[in-house]
Amino acid sequence: MSGLATARRIVVKVGSSLLIGQDGANAHWLAAFAADVARLRSRGQQVLVVSSGAVALGRRRLALGRRALTLPEKQAAAAAGQSALMRAWEEAFEPHTVTAAQILLTRDDTEVRRRWLNARATVETLLSLGALPVVNENDTVVTEELRYGDNDRLAARVAQMIGADVLVLLSDVDGLYNADPRSDASAEHLPRIGRITPEIDAMAGGANSGAGVGTGGMATKLAAAKIASAAGCATVITLGTRPSPLLSVEEGARATIIEPSTTPKAAYKAWIAGSLAPAGTLTVDTGAANALRRGKSLLAAGVRAVDGRFEKGDAVLVRDEAGHEIGRGIVRYEAGHAGQICGLRSEAIEAALGYTAGPLIHADDLALSAHGAVVG
Ligand code: GLU
Image 1 (cartoon, rainbow, N blue to C red):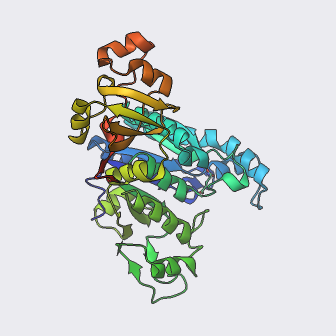
Image 2 (tube, protein in one colour):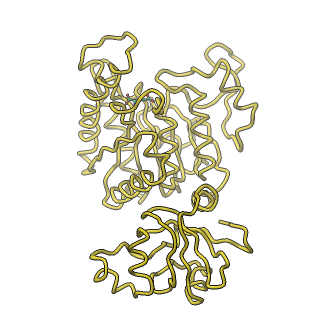
Image 3 (spheres, helix red, strand yellow):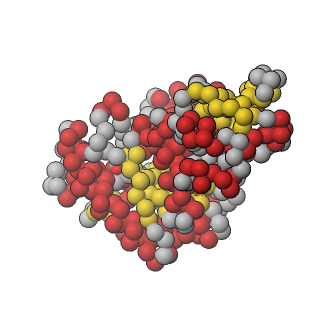
């Protein structure tokens, strides 16, 4: 079981070798793939695509030939190719009346928290509006040190960002082998990996590391799978050259499935509890403290005091009036505004600030602490 049939959110990474044919974008493959994605969407599943191909398409458009490109040339190629890439996605999804929406991310957008929250909000909005987000790295602006360079890892970060259940890496190999199948006839396919052990790393790091065309070989696929697994997301590595690769996986086609080590929700809460230094404190009354412990959101009405200097999207500590830590959460208002609305009922927030962003901390963004120890 790949989990594809039951996943709520699925990120599919499509590599250049699938998308680009002899004469530019491979419209034939794209049309079949769009139908495959439309099938998942009609079951109520949300799909996000991470698409490579900008550099490959731009290389053609700028007549750069097949030679190795310098970084500025790659960036120029990405600029010329990205628009053609999006046109190809739009055309593929038009028959399904699905709007493709371009999102270009840099590594900072997926790793610096505030930008991460911003990008996440945009992706969430697009998904709720029924659009198909098509993500690529913003190759034209990133420097060598700051780029992902391969879309496998970018796709894993995106999967983490949106709490996806399944990440599908479509590639030109049908999964992971214990040796390079091109040169070793006895190489065995690995259908399921519970945990990425050093032995598995070693398999992908040796002769297999460069397996496959495109930027990411097996080593980058495993690096991506590790990010996904820790974020509660399963990874499926499978052959993308089939016309309907997702349907094929559901029907049992050969693939390697790397299991998640947690759930997306627990991983997100652990990230809030563990990786973020609180920038302030909200002190809440007894009623609010009890409501939070029952899994409710923190409303302004229950807040007695606001301390610290924080921005919207920062992590803050939540304490009861006796000073006990209740949890840590991501706050939706900056400190000044939080101070202005503390004690107010939700209906009064708009009049006080001219806008409302809902509760101070949404239950989904709050990691409760137990007996001083922070838990998910
Ligand atoms: N962002 C690159 C492009 O669109 C692709 C990187 C990759 O192939 O992984 O051309």
